[in-house]
Image 1 (cartoon, rainbow, N blue to C red):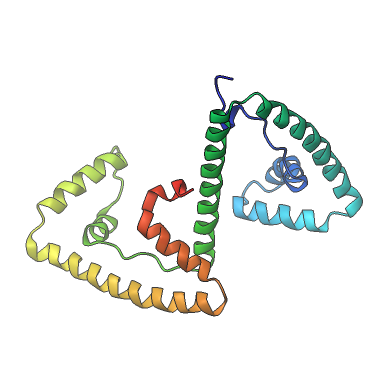
Image 2: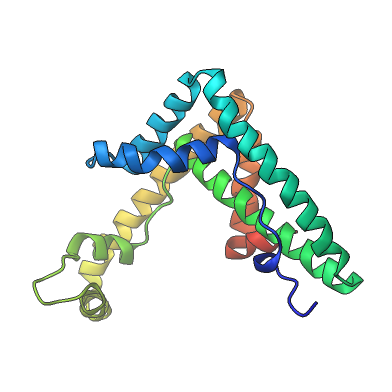
Length: 208
């Protein structure tokens, strides 16, 4: 087999809840066009919880039938791979799993109110002055502000550097309190993830 990437492997079927969501999401969106995605997701979750078991059974049976076909196709697909291709597929699968875990942890950090990182003097300057003028793109505006920052007088630049230093102190105090709170509620895994992410950075998805 020439191409053994996950994109060509048989796809695992949707869960019964996802099937329900995909079917009802367009209806809910049409009935409530102003709802945000987060609100739609919440309503779908509530609707699924309240759905009678007899109606849930329809989605579960459809998933089970699709899962049976998937297992047969996956077994056939893997039987055509040589040892090296199987190794490539396992590595790609691990990277994909790591990326999902990364997204999940990032979302949890937000949900649990992790303090925002301190801003640099440059970032404070940009956020204070950035505004898209009519006929000026965001890229053009950034270019203009970059030039302004470069030629900013030392005294004016010092104001932003001091604000950045104040923000750093704010962050250190808030992150300390946040970490203590996470330890109290037994979510030390979020602390480990935060420190691991800081160490590895954007390559965290390759840790497997």
